[in-house]
Length: 428
Image (cartoon, rainbow, N blue to C red; front, side):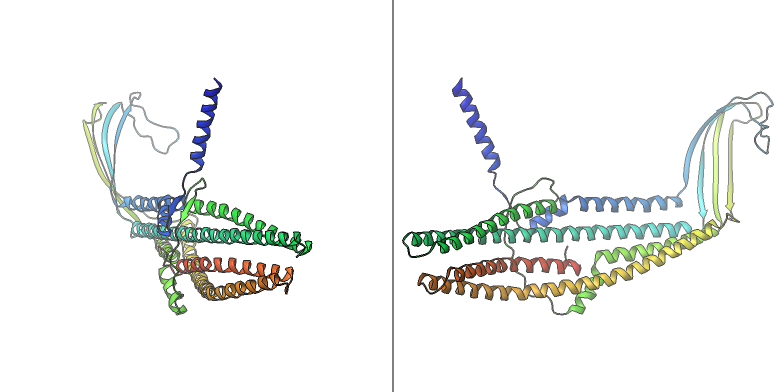
């Protein structure tokens, strides 16, 4: 019995270990962007909103088509009775059972329905551009998280190498101190440096988990995933013509295109509100049969008519609606101006950040080269007894900082280039 229990527990532990040891998902940037475009709820919500906006256009356009409906009515009444209370007239009520159809067709409302349809169509186009804007926003989030995760992995490698190098120094200094060739103070300094490296390693390990959670969320996953990320080629320097970039952004940014469609839709809606003061002409027709009826009624009925509704006075309702629509259109125009100003500013800032990040590539590489050389010299001086442990510690710290800066500079530039592509409307 004990052997069976031990075997069962062993199988459980093996199964759990297999579940934990699942290999990470291999992922390129293009694959990550494709997953986010398909899986992210923001993109799905924007697409559903665009589909709903298209239905609004159909709803408004339906006023151009006839309304056909059927009716079945039955009534029983006292002979020669009239409805006498509650109304100004006294219509007769006859015993009957009838069925028929009625059709109602708008003849003209002098452009109101046409303007309403155009307004709804423009707003639907604006919503479609919002889908593109949301898609671009999700992609830039993915790019940020992707390169941040690569940067965290690079920093982790630096931290691991730093711990290994400083552990070696601690072992060497400890051995020398035991041989009375170095003081215990040197051992303490080396141990402090090792402890700092371990703290750096702990922070780097936490950053790996944090960036992995960010990337999982950017891809639309609720649970944290593990990924094996592929390196992306480093892009060249940013385009030099800033004015051309700004002009392209003002032309291609989907948020701005959406705002312009919304403005045009607001103008057409204002035109429709002006048309409220005009008459509405519609035609009505009814036809049916009366299989059971009083003697005063025939076996069937039919009639046609024309209705003309002319607005006379309604407490300035239509005037206020027209004024409101005009003001809303003016508000949309000012919002476009504000959005243009913000986009121009964001493009300039993103361009400056990208250029600065590109310049940091060579500067951090040079810094790392000099810090490595300084560490070699400091270590040689320390081994020869010409330098102090403080000098060696400072050189180690400088090299670690330079390695982290160099490791992050590449991915910072890739992030800034992705942000620049987003700001100019080139991230699809």
